Image 1 (tube, protein in one colour):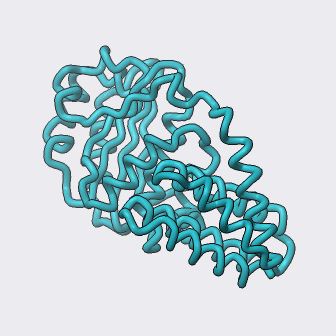
Image 2 (cartoon, helix red, strand yellow; image 1 turned 135 degrees about the vertical axis):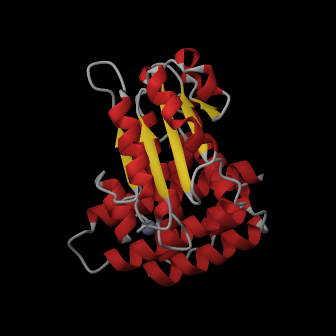
Length: 272
Ligand SMILES: [Zn+2]
């Protein structure tokens, strides 16, 4: 059980943008994930599916039925279309329209079209209207490595998120921060308040605090996996969800010092 996004380090900026848009109820109903040589775009589309389908308040939780099915790429709320023999033909448009005509069984519906630049003219034309005015809670993700080859009629109807190769280069500062996140949890478990002081000092601004709290989530996620056979799983999962809630609160501009302090006490109680 997992949040797809946790296996995609380096896409924090893009993810933050999507989470923010969801939080503000401003998610565009058609998005192009574009960028050459970035193979994680489809995975990110599934992470997006978890974000909009998750049944929990702190979406995506990674553990509810919707999250699990999206992680397994078997979500009833998601239709995945891939080209056949280098083309996306009219049958695909029919499949999409059929999918959208069925009664909605999930809170939202997502259509992911991989290599959307291979949509032929006829197929694209059949989809224009529904992409422009989709049914409520319907999202199209057009994944493409060749945005310039996407039909202009489609290009003008989507909001584009560009995956620039340099945007996901590993950050040299991350390993240090990551160690700090691990120490924070260990120290909190032993009731050492220095952990909190150091975390406060590292979180000079919101960006730093966000980075720190995401690394805490990753650390907790890994500890959950390592402890999957023990009784600690529930505690670690709960703590990991509160770390994610801290992330959302940071995005909503709640006071960082207060959030970190609250989280420290939660971690201390959970891990002692
Ligand atoms: Zn969920």
